[in-house]
Image 1 (cartoon, rainbow over the protein chains, first blue to last red):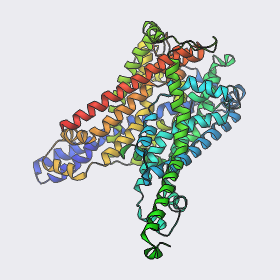
Image 2: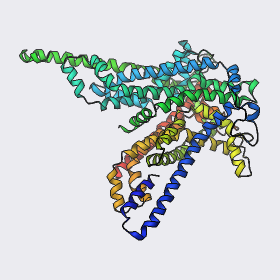
Image 3: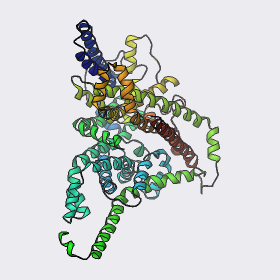
Image 4: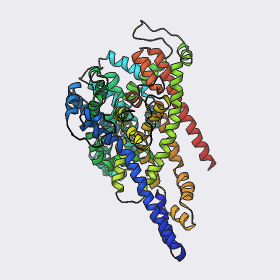
Length: 303
Length: 309
């Protein structure tokens, strides 16, 4: 659709040819209209499923199952949230999800800043091998390690604990995080650090007082991206959580679905829970959209 | 501090810098250690154990696991369920990757063009990326419900039929693929958008002066410039399709029948419902080999096309 942009310029450059001018401008308007039609279709495709969740969450169950469907709830209510909270420990799961996401994002960022600094700034034997190894280990499918991990965590009594899930998630986040962070550190000009080192500052002091402050926006970016990723995590809690003490909201949704009591009317619960899951993460995404886009782009293009 | 060193004998300087260099090396390893150890313990070690277990009949139900050679692998190729999930995994990977890429290029071109409210549309594009797969999967279970679902309702208002989306094997597979595209194409589109913004503007200008059509510019300038990025994306997107899990778990549980069982869902069931640790590991190793094969194919293809240029 950048085609229109290009055509606008083309129209300007050839506008001296008077006979062409009218059909040109007609074509321009047509393309403009077409562009907005495409945008509207795109918005509909993207937003309709989300609207479906919002609509169902606020519609009482007896109004949910109608043909044809009502696209606005006639009697909006919070009853679905109440029944969802009865079916699953909503508050506990919300806390679990938050703690898990924040801790995972925090530790993954700390560990990857340390590694990224070494990879970007110190020449040491084996650095290439380690860097590549870390990166390629990200291609190991989680499903191809989950059985031994389960056995290992069983032996270490890390099953059904937030700590255990944090260990798993940080590991999962590390390859991409190290990759992105190393590319961020490489973008910092060396001069500042060199000046600090000539002044006799230690490497670690340079890291803490010079590099980390410059990196602060990048650190925040990666923290948010990892936070959003962790919040979505479903596979690890599904397998490692046994009780409410470590179950996350993502697992809670499926619990509300398979609860036999709610078999026929579970959708109201699920929609309410779905909304509880997506509202915080959507807010975060919209507030930090610039940083997120920048971070996603940085990870892919460099190298 | 170092200003005074000029008068110090050179030998001592060498010792000093060498000690400094040693300290620096040590520091490098210390800094890298947490990441490396974390991955070794929580990824590499379990992965190697999976390979080992794939040659055993390990199961929490039986006693000491016995080494059974390639028996798990031969069993896999005779297992109709596993073969069925393998075939859907291939269909899913190929079609979802292709559709995702085309759709993502479309979104990227759209978001790269100038129009009012572009910032808002770009923000909306991030929402599927932030949407947990399990949430959109459960929502779709009802959205595609053939009696009360929204998709059905919208179709029924225009066309006189109500397909059994999730009851029909082919339709259910299509729904799984479309949802996967909906959830993941926005991410790819952001990467492609970055690539678009990296194309020098004078290339467009030159083409326009030469009177190239919009389609020609896309075909002869944009696509070739994006080619390396698209190949990298191909590797990334396709390998992640092989291990898709959440969507199938939340939407179809592999059904109807076994139609939408992806390999990773199959492994999950073998390992955690059937408690066949050894057998499940063998299928997991096979899934890993698929990931490697896909990456290699695209990588070699990329190398060859680079050389051709």
